[in-house]
Length: 279
Image (cartoon, rainbow, N blue to C red):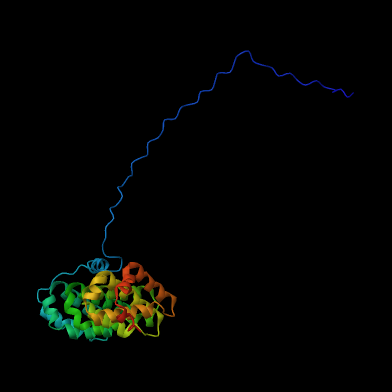
């Protein structure tokens, strides 16, 4: 047998008994009230529609003129100058006239819009962005009066997406197109968008066209699209059906988002003999 050489040491027990541990009972915590109440769900214009255009147009502090007719003449002289700083001053005069003296500006509206369509393509980005901001201002404050000018302004704005990839320039072009879609009549909008953007070789131009067709559909709604007339409805649906199978994935994605906003039911209520006509 193997015996241990050392005995195990004895554990000394204290005479004083250890005090029992007390567990603190935790009171159940009531859920703290939220610091801010949840905002109510509101239905209104999406980002990129009239709400944004008006907000951007209101950021500039413009004061009315004492002699607006003289300022209108001065704006034409400055816009025809080769000095880019004078062009910026002329564009600011036009924005002020649109906000505070719209009736006077409408007497020369066509001439002003022709100059703006030219300045949108200015090689100096500052002048081009100021011109597009001026276009947005005109649509916000003049509304339907810009109907006859949409065929000049709309294509110039759409073609910016084929000319550059600079983010701040494209943002200004989008803002001006948002204001155009909000301010003009649906027929003029559809013509301005489709004549330039439906079959353009640039996917960016076609994608921008699809985006603003979606905006137009959100504003009008399905019933109003049919109430606008047979020609308008067929042209609108033909454009959407073509873009839904576009070669560029970004164009298809924007078009499918448009379906999610309610365009899909248009085909379900369209008579079959009209469906056969869609190319």
